[in-house]
Amino acid sequence: METLTVSDPVLCPLDHLGLIAFTGEDAQSFLQGQLTNDVRLISADRSQLAGYCTAKGRLLATFLLWKTNDGYCGQLHGAIAATVQKRLGLYVLRAKVSITDVAARWGRLGIAGTDCVTLLEACFGSLPQQPMDTLRHEDITLIRLHDGGTPRFQIIAPAHTIPALRARFERDCRMVEPAYWEWLEIRAGIPQIGPGTQEEFVPQMVNLDLLDGISFKKGCYIGQEIVARTHYLGKVKRRTHLAHVDVAQPPPAGTAIYGTTATEPAGMVINAAMAPAGGCDLLAEIQLDRLAGPLHLGSSEGPRLALLPLPYDV
Image (cartoon, rainbow, N blue to C red; front, side, top):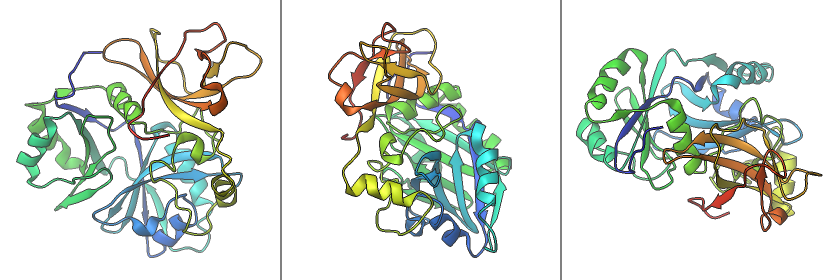
């Protein structure tokens, strides 16, 4: 992976991510009964993270949600988008809501780097200022994303306008692969549930509460009882941490993490990507009482993890 500085503006097409639209007069109430966050707080000015759980409070997906003219869009791991959409469809019943795959309708670009702010201002004028703030420019939506010291934005626009937008930014940005964008997500501490980690975690285990991805005041949703009990009884014994490990390939999501003994895993890899400076950075869910000792990837004799600070408090 090419070495870049935090100031270097980078551009990444986000076509690898799934995109589901929720439209109809009951779209808000439907999502309110399905997801961990308070969908009523999403507006033209504000997006949010949210989780989708089983009845046992285990995450099936994590979403980035934003408002559209006729409802909401939810972005998630591309490999699980179809199955998650199908499962959500089972709960529609008599609700007046349509759930559709709109990945081909809306193009998405990720742009990051300190210097990208100047480029975006030159193109759009004003920008969202805080993480999860959104700003509309006619039919284009800008979202300021959580970052790990490197400003990051997402551009959502009608698919037919993406080539012109891409060409405009390509002149000043380095094009990067999705793996680089995934690394930026990891450095920002943003977990993404995918095929290897579905039904493994209660939302607090992946720090969704620390990212304002859970509302404890909104009322009932699928899995709410377990999530609320974990919160109010203070029983969060596992949290997600940022770590670095010297390996030549990123470990698959779901790879076990061990302490000095192989009897019981201490945690699990959620997301991993090669770091530009070498080695691999990863987000791993780890038992809090195992953090003091050595942690190894894959086995008690595997490569040792070096814990790194997250951009938010755990």
